[in-house]
Length: 540
Ligand code: AMP
Image (cartoon, rainbow, N blue to C red; front, top):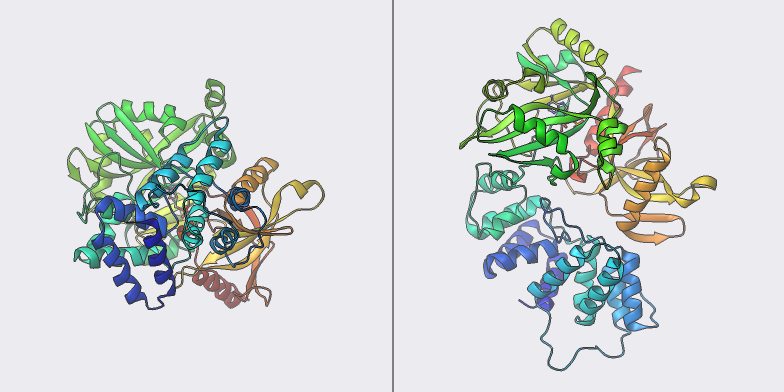
């Protein structure tokens, strides 16, 4: 299919307001194209370019795009509400398209190939290389096509194609049950993969393809958790990063919670896993923490090590890591996803030789015993505990209340949607952040507060770089960004406030952690913020 036709489809999708009609329209596109091309078309339409399980990134900011297109067109007076419209309007000033008469019009496949080439440009000179490919890409398209291309490149197509809608469209296109498509998307890591496989569903874990991790909800206390789950398992909640461990013979791969392959950054963990496992093939899950002499080290140290571009022996000695396992999803050729928690834990204890490699756990229905376990976990320097329902299956990507986290301090995971430059020493950074909660009904992010507190200079630097690469608009000191960076925020109180659309504002908000292991759709919801507001109100 020509890219021009995909751009008209995108326009139509943007204009359709009925969800059902959108689903049918996207389903039609999926059915019309060969699987590989449909896969690429969906990635472009959703502004992803690469699926979540693919670590490649385009890393093209809107400023770079602007620069490249300015060079193509010379003088222009751009107009528009998003990057796509601006770039489209700029291209209307182009005197003549610089393509030869014999050049074929751009197809989806060719556009995708060029986008892949941009992502793989690395090392010295990569900026120039990226610029050259971008320039050639934009020289091939008409202004109407440039709209979709530019928005896809900066990752904001705004077509209302949420993951839920894609799942509906896939079910419709291949005549499958929605629940099965959803489950396969979680097991395969993303819905795009189902399209690439021509609608073939895979409901069993595939070794070396990361599965969406099962998620936890919050319980306010041990007592409430036990009241909700009854007799349950309690485990230490370790404050580290989650890893999914895939093993096949001597080959081990480790995936982060966001499904990226992190094997190379934690070779010491790979060694540990290989040593202690009594099975040929396995998919296990656990938490990696920094630990010395059996004592957890601060989360910041773990981050410092994981953010390092290169790993050397000295940093590995300085910040030693340890993996504590807590779940088992596959062993040899048997999937354990449907088995009860208690059965998965028993199998884990069977295949892991050293009990010290497992997260400490107890099974209880006694609140006192649970509270004592919580105290012990905190005394040992951990974050709190997890309560898990004994008969619960492993639900990939699941947000049900089958796992409940219980922490001492309440925090919210919020998304940075905009930032401002600081003053004085901080003027070189975007250091003042607008924090937003997710609205699960609309997929929008709603601002609930602002803060410049909590980050170290190193973290300000990291965040500033990241924000620049995900900017969708810049006006004066303010930058608006794609909602992707999740931060854990502590606060003293939630107040009513006319300042933000949410009507609420966090008081004395401060960032306690950058959660680069979480995606924006795992952030806390606006309903959770309202619930916390109500709760504190009741207490007064
Ligand atoms: P949160 O990130 O605050 O939503 O809490 C869930 C995260 O806690 C998981 O994704 C894991 O990374 C981490 N975690 C720590 N200990 C455990 C445990 N025993 N079981 C499951 N998750 C754990």
